[in-house]
Amino acid sequence: MAGVTIRDVAQAAGVSLGSASRALNGGKHVSARVARDVAAAADRLGYQPDFLARSLRTRSSGMVGCLVSDVANPLYASIVQAAEARLRDAGYLLVVANTGNDPARERAAAAAFRGRRLDGILVAPGSNANDKTWRDLAAGGAPVVILDRDAPAEDGEVPWPSVLVDHRGGARAATRYLIGLGHRRIALLTPGARMRPGRERIDGFQAAFAEAGIDPAGAQVCVQESSMDFAHGDALALLGMASRPTALVALGTRILAGALRAARELRLSVPCDLSMLSIGDTDLAAVHAPAITALRWNLEEVGRAAAELLLQRLRQGPGSGPSRALLPVDLVLRESCAPPPTI
Image (cartoon, rainbow, N blue to C red; front, side, top):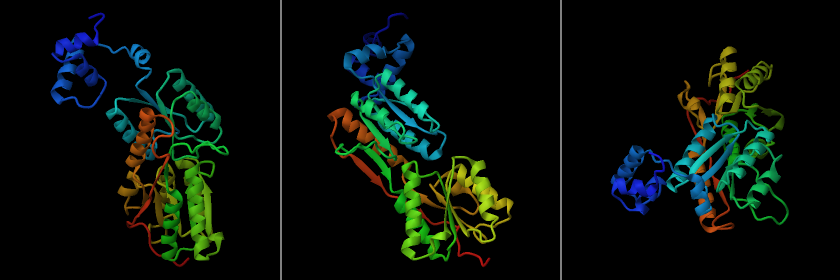
């Protein structure tokens, strides 16, 4: 049916215009019956909402952008899913852009978000290369919340709203645990210091050695790309050394998979020959035999906290509410760590 309006839908469903609008826009205070009847009427009539007209009328697109480097990464996927659920409850559609840590793709995605006049943006920058891009977005009126990355910072600048994870504290706790088991040669396989999580993990890892008064030469940092093949090659080289590490701490995605594959190829038993610890309690860490001891943070809480920070600014304007959330990291003990062998 051509030219179907929301008024037609409301009449067909037998509800008020306001009830039909709330039901179609995902608003609260709509009963299950009204939501069902409105959806059925809209489907029967072939109603298509005019988002451009709504944007002009309300000065809101009803959409929020989310920019991440790798949406397939399980550590990102749970965050995005939780943010999407909270924003959907508030009546917003989340639009996700995947950038592959490419600064040019970040800029292109930011330009697309700006051109579509998205109401706000959640962003996990791949580097500091595009700080000006995020400043320009915020200057255009769209609130920007940083996801576990370094926020653009200049002297005297108000802190950017951000949700951070205590990677430093987690890495320090994990390294202390391995040192307590007797390990003195430990390798950390993590993305590098150009991004906040990698830098914080490296700092926490090295701090644990310093606090214990142990030769820092035993703390081996292997900077990784998010690639199973790259981690596999590095792990093979490390574990083939005469004085090989007796424990590996690896990001619990493809990097952990590559390290486990290298250990298997070298016929090293976990944990008898080699202790393994995962950064992030991913499915791989949980289902591997033996189950992998892991650093865990609440990924869903990261997404919800980011959505809440953004919603506060959408409702109340810049500077409203807290500017930062720091979420803890816990050590989950399983069966993959033991005292080092005599080698």
